[in-house]
Image (cartoon, rainbow, N blue to C red; front, side, top):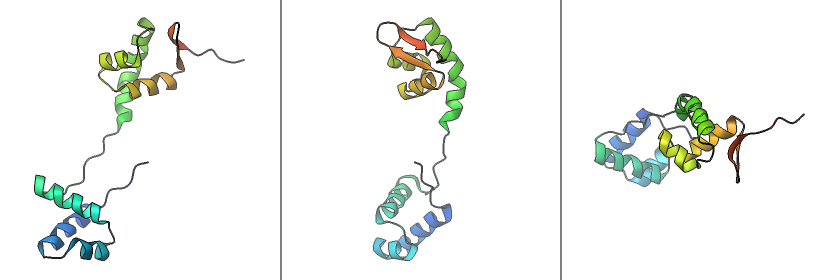
Length: 120
């Protein structure tokens, strides 16, 4: 489950309050955020000079791009392991597993990856 990031404004307020001399506990009570969150903002500010929100990368775009290539690769190399396919396609083996499962493929110990049979 992904949580929503605090706003840029709140992050900057934390840094401003630290610079004004308030303690982390005072800021925590005032803004109703946890001390570890405040510590993270302070650490990020010291390391980078800002507390900008990290951009969210949607891996579904990566999956769409690689899906057809992965299926074609599996058809030609049905005995390849998840790790071998992942290395060839330059994605994680979890991504490979997700794509294969989504496209109806399962691993059979003796024959490699096969398309699941439709039940009548």
